[in-house]
Every structure is written in C-alpha cells, then in structure tokens.
Length: 211
Image 1 (cartoon, helix red, strand yellow):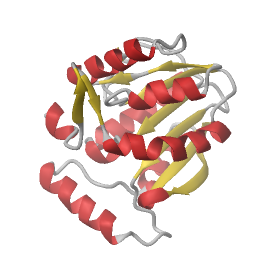
Image 2: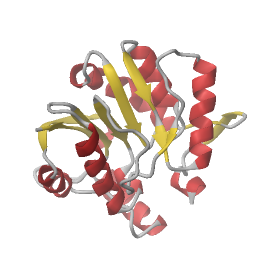
Image 3: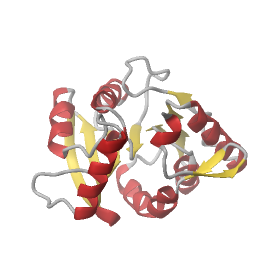
C-alpha cells in the first residue's frame, strides 16, 4: 500500500526517496507560503512524503520550525534521512501521524501544511486533517493545502479528469475532492476559507484560518 501510494517516487541514496513533483512544485509553493505562513513558530506538515519539501521549506524559512510527519514507515525513514543530510537546526525528527486518527502526538502548531494528500487518501483522512488542524491551531492560524482539486466555478482540466479516473482505478477511496465539500467540513470545525490561489499544472493552493 505504501509503495503504491507514492507510485511516482524513486530512490536517491539509501532510504532517501525523491518525487519529481516535489522538485517541480516546491518553488511556486514556497512563493505562496511566504505570504501565508507566520513569520515565526511551528509548522506541522502532514503527509510529508519523501521529506524533500520539509528540508527545502525549512531552509527557505529559517525563522520557522518545521515538524514533518507521515503515516508510512518508509516515508518516515526517507524524511529522517533527508533531515540528517540537510543538518538544518529548524527541522524536527518526523512524527508518525495518521491524519484520520484523533490521536496525534503533538498538541499545538502555529500552521498546518498538507501537500498532495487528500486525493490519494480516503475521505476520512481529509476530515481528520480538518479536525486535527482545528484542535492544534490558535485563532487566526493557517491551514494550507496544495494539490489538484475540483471546484464548482472552475472548469476541470482534461488532465485532471484523467488523473481522477486513474486514482479511482488504483483505489476507489481516492480521487480529486471538491473544494466546496472540504470547505463545508472545515466550516463546521471553525475554519474559514480565506483564499484560493491558482497554481501551475492545474493545481490550487487553499488557505483556511482558524476563527
């Protein structure tokens, strides 16, 4: 299951893995994070995957402390290997977090970031992400998501239609989510959608703030 979830990753050295998408999207994501993240504090990244984003963003934003996490043991090993290789003082050891569970081994964060998870996990994981962010974030703090989405007032690109079909073929519980569905669940938990930002390759960055 873990290897299939990260079907586009490859080995770098030892247990370190690399995702081509992470290398392509990290700079555009970082540009938006520079606007949306607080100037200091702890950023909890849910579903950190290979760990490449964690070390890149930690280096890019040295006044922020970065807490990577994942549910898969091979991802946690890759994250730790990238962390050790980068030797940055503001990257914490990765935590094992199942987004769908209420039992997160962390009790606070100044921002929660999740990149490319909700479409390759069951819907309860998305709901768990919302619930966890609502528990951890103080008033006004951001929950930031990036990835391919469906949105009622935005025409769905043909590539995203094909991607959605491929995801559902791999696992019927996967697939592109509607922004409106996620937002409805977020609002029930006190998170307000503050901004939607179009991104390259028909992706979106979405910002919720804890009210």
